[in-house]
Amino acid sequence: MTTKNVFDEHEGRVAIITAIATEVKALTLREGGDEMISTSDPKAEKLVYARAYQAWADCKIEGTADDIFETVQEVLDI
Image 1: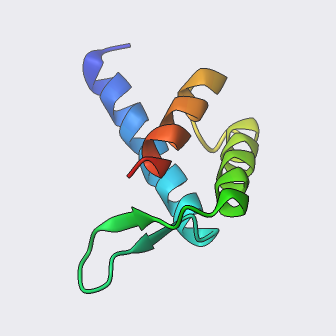
Image 2: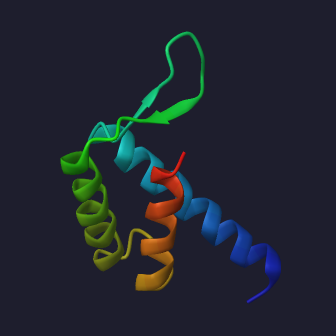
């Protein structure tokens, strides 16, 4: 796998997991801007992990289990 493919795969994971986080309201748009911020809602954060792993199990997200975990952490640490 080339570096570009690894980068593209990571960016794809970030995009999908960010969408999941927004959908379950773990992330929201900052008022008056286009920046995402965490809602610091533990229930929503658990849903992000659950839905991200389900998407991975359904082959909608590429990578390893560790990749999914690290990307969820990255997205929620915004």
